[in-house]
Amino acid sequence: MDFIGNIVASEFSDFNDLGEFVVVVIRLLLAALLGGLLGLEREQRGKAAGIRTHMLVCMGAALFIFIPQQAGISDSEMSRVIQGVIAGIGFLCAGSIIIGKDNQGATGLTTAAGIWFTAAIGIAVGLGREQTAVLCTALAWMVLYVMPFFISLIRKKIP
Image 1 (cartoon, rainbow, N blue to C red):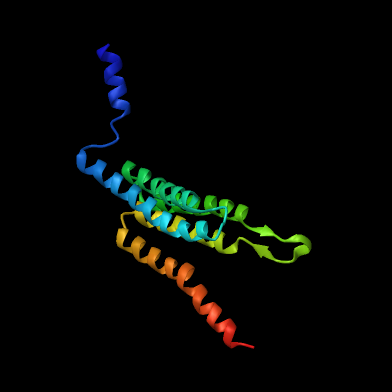
Image 2 (image 1 turned 90 degrees about the horizontal axis):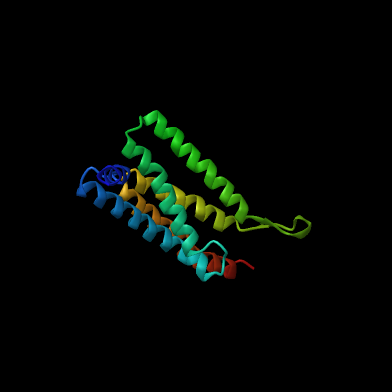
């Protein structure tokens, strides 16, 4: 029985110490929070990719970066991981864009850009660049929440 217990314990020994566990928890919770803040705007506008989607994208991107980092991969290998995350997110974003009937225009572009940017924030969190991630979230939040007010003011002034 000890043999099986030791195997199970070794399979669940990702963390070298409590500090490493705390770092993972902080990064994933921060990714969830930042992704959720951006997804909230999409949710309020009734878009399909809302809070949960943005939270999962941000946490997923952070995890895809953090796990190889824990494994000790080189910078050139990390570059390939980041490229893979970006390419994968591109497919998700493409699925959120809908071309109108008779090619009357595309919808979902802002949602796609938001998902893409949310993944970038997740990458920043995964790399341990929390301040950059928070700053980028604040800037994206301004684009999503503040810019529509300026756009409506400009449209009212232009005949």
